[in-house]
Amino acid sequence: MTFLTPLVLFRVASVLAWLAVVATARARRGRLYAQFVGVLLGIHTLSACAVFRHVGPLAPAFAYLHAAVYLHFFLLSRPRMRPLAYRALVSIPASFFVAAVFLSFPWAIAGALGATPYGLWAPFALAGVGTLQSLTARREEVELVVDRAHVEGLRRHPLPREEPPGPRRPLRIVQITDPHLGPFMSVERLRGICERAVAREPDLIVLTGDYLTMESQHTADHLAEALSPLRALEGRVFACHGNHDHEAPRHVATALARAGARLLVDEAALVETAAGPVQVLGMDFHYRDRDARMAEVCARHPRVKGALRLILLHDPGAFRHLGEGEGDLVLSGHTHGGQIGVVSLGGTWTALRLFVKMPDHGLWARGPDRLYVHRGTGHYGFPLRLGVPAEESVLKVHLAGDGA
Image 1 (cartoon, rainbow, N blue to C red):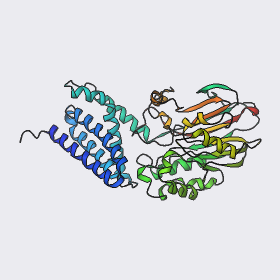
Image 2 (image 1 turned 180 degrees about the vertical axis):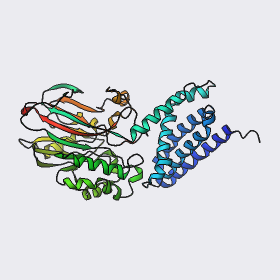
Image 3 (image 1 turned 60 degrees about the vertical axis):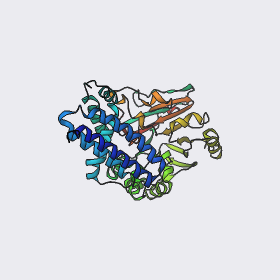
Image 4 (image 1 turned 90 degrees about the horizontal axis):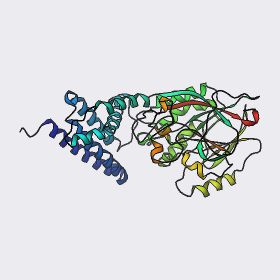
């Protein structure tokens, strides 16, 4: 049966696998997940089938990675944290391949039209770099000056090139955000990040949301274990919700409590530090009526005289809804730093800014308020980082009244 060529077999198997994954997703997790998987894997299947004929002797490896994608999404229908061997052989290769096939879409179009897709190796090389970046983080110290000078509009704000002088040492904060416990963020990796955070002896550790993924939402145990080193600084660790935390709020609350972190859900706490008093205000995540909700929270928790007002706000897109003058320093995450861009090369551009105008990473200013958008501890959504490294930083916050 000569019509069953490798290309035909590849295409038939791909369509059948796609249908099996969508059907399983619908039966086990419901309509929304089935729709998501159907669209994502549908595009992936079309693109992979278009370039398969051009991969030559790499066809067996191509087929293996392609199969790993379907297996990965098939098993996501039943959330479980997977062991290292599975992540090494399936989850991470599948993420690499989905990203590579997505990036190769122009080559797929050329192949579907009968042209030779020269340079097909390029998107796969980029995905390889992205895979390595997704498994590592950049450790740094970030100098921030809270000067309260008025800035027109919302714009990126420059960071000082060196530590500003002052009579008092700065407030030292370690921010952990968007760890997204899952394929790229194992319990062991996140626990190591927390251990290093404690070892840096900060005044405060703040966690600004999105702790889990589909793989880790079935129990609080994994997150609690990963965050357990933070208990050494109990009383100085504060957290807020991210959007994904509303998918498993009980597990998140339980894990944070077991780790000694205080979850602030539209609540405030006053903490004395070696750098002075700090009022920490944790905003819950909401999509709607942000202006009214945030105004009500701020009215219920007015400023404490003499204290730095630190606001934990997962989504930096909500910063523009915050009343002007309400936050000396707002700490956000959510964007994963833009996730794809040229930050690794020293630039500021990210792909996120092509689609939305929210702050993507770094320090921003609006009026007298300052916003720092952390590039994220982990990532989610698009399977890889590319050109935007994850962040493990100490924020050194200087107050203008101290000579900064």
